[in-house]
Amino acid sequence: MICNTKILCILILLFLSLYTIHVLARDSDNKDSDNKDSNSKNDSDSGSESGKKENDSGSDSNKDSDEHESYLISCGSQNEAEDSLGRKWVSDSKFLTSSDCSLTEELNKTDPTLPSEVPYKSVRIFNATSSYMLSVTTKTRLWIRLHFYPFDFGKVEPAKAYFSVIANEFTLLKNFSAFNTAASLTEAYIVKEFSLTPVTCGKLNITIIPSTQPESSIGFLNGIEVIPMPDIFKITPLVGFHDQTIEVQNSSVQTMYRLNIGGDLIPPTEDAEGGGNRTWHEDGGYLIGAPATKFGVVGEADSNNVTIQYQGDVSEYIAPEAVYKTARSMGPSPNVNLNTNLTWQFEVDANFTYVVRLHFCDFELEMTNQRVFDIFLNNHTAQQSADVIGWAGRGSSGRGTTVYKDYAIYLNDRNNGAEQIWVALHPSDKTQPEYYDSLLNGLEVFKLNDTCGNFGSEKQVPIKRYCYSDEFLQKAKVDDADCKPRDQDD
Image (tube, rainbow, N blue to C red; front, side, top):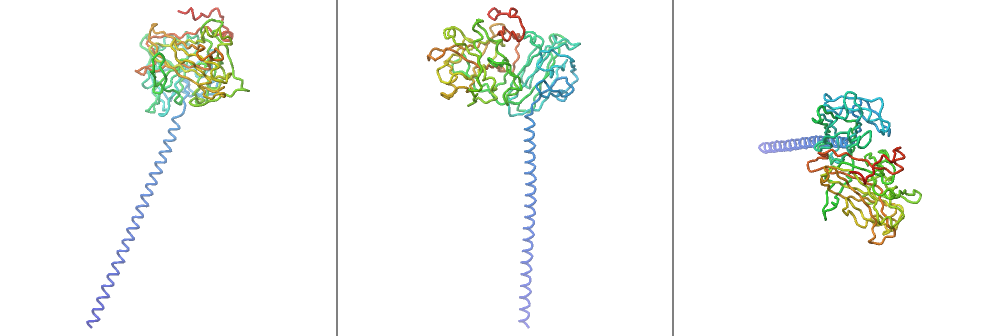
């Protein structure tokens, strides 16, 4: 009996042990299941967050893509419209922070010399400080172009329009008169172009401030362009100062002149891809010197025998192929060339630093030391023994290769606010080249902002046009006798 009791106790203890093991195992399974559920939930949450991040990233990507949109804004217009080049301009109303201080006007008829009625047939007139706000890319420079057509505004006289324009921290125009500027240029319209460094805040605020002098002054705008652009500037030697350079890539600039040397006008739609719809003007009105030699000889590349080749840091957006297909040289007479220069002169504002960009492409010669010349800015040597084929670095295959060179120059105020930049090319005889000649295909002049972020000059210096070549005078039907020679200018 005792033995049976012991056996029963042992069986009971064994049962309890097995039950405990089963319960513990089940708890363990439940915990594992909970952990799996938790991990699954975490994975799901993580996936959700990841998806959210991916969506956010996609949103940012889309936003970044949107930020690279260009703006063509027709000021004072109520509807979208196309210009003569097929570009679409939108109304400015949605970009104005307030329209209470402005009025609009639209013309039925415009000056026939305008390149297009849009954006010049409409205008927004400001009688108090007003602003446009635009969302822009934070990663690239921006072309900004301001269009002005100082026509009769009806009750408002354009001659009374004196105003300033500020883009974020940069003063683009100070006490500006589009009426006087257009009159001095004998042009119906004015375009002011700037290249701003990246806007880190992503917002571009363009503010128009009418002057308080003269009394009742107004401001006005006909069109605004804002176009993202690649950085086309770099460290540049400062002419007249030994081993001094300017970090132009860190500055905003104003385009003063852009010329297709020896060629016709290149409209925005024919500019290089990525160039930002630039206009390249003819150069005949800026040449100076003796009438018999100042125009030199115009040449054009033979498309059957020469292919324009971009290489190195000269991408197509630096200048379109059309610029490099034409050139102006001095002519076939070495004795005449050695005693003259090929010279262009430009009116500019004093107390600013300027960058002169020269575009070269020799589509006639093939070897180094065939055409070698010196480059001068305001009688300072910018470059000795320039050899376009040598710069191309392609030996016997250097013909048709594009090259550009930048030179900076600072202009002090010596003439009561009026200054000039002289660009002169003269044949070099140091290396005894095969031909005593010089060559240029394109030219640009840029003004750098001063230390206060300012482009506007305190003194209004009218930009003057001078004698054009015979072909330009014929096109414009201007009597040559009415054109004042430059060497007689005060």
